[in-house]
Image (cartoon, rainbow, N blue to C red; front, top):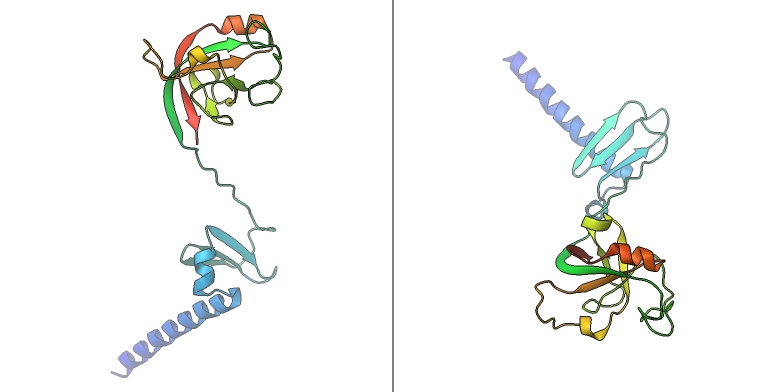
Length: 187
């Protein structure tokens, strides 16, 4: 019986020591319920070269006997943008008076033409789009308008609109041709 009493005292003592150690870590880190909600991901605290390194991830604290990092680590998190797909007829144009107006190097939004500009009447200025089947991940920006006949509502077409891509030369625009494909409208 004396032996059983000694084992229960030892287990109670080890539990108490564990609780005190965890509470000491919380106090050492300045950890409060308010800062717990603000903390996201994992962080590393290097207390001293001879002391332990403390890792925290969510509600779990890990400690090592030797430092594993010299400096705090930063992790970049990327989020995929939401997209809306639409079927359009894609064409090309260049800065010539017969394809635009009397000021062929100025877009309808007032900017100078450059690579990555498209004209579309059904999207607002500044809308970013991708044409993945033709240009992969390249992002285009709507900064120009097409002739009024390419404005909605569209008669006798099954697609959602027209997109005209600006090219440096008339030959590049001609090589683009006309193609019906889908675009991704980035949000």
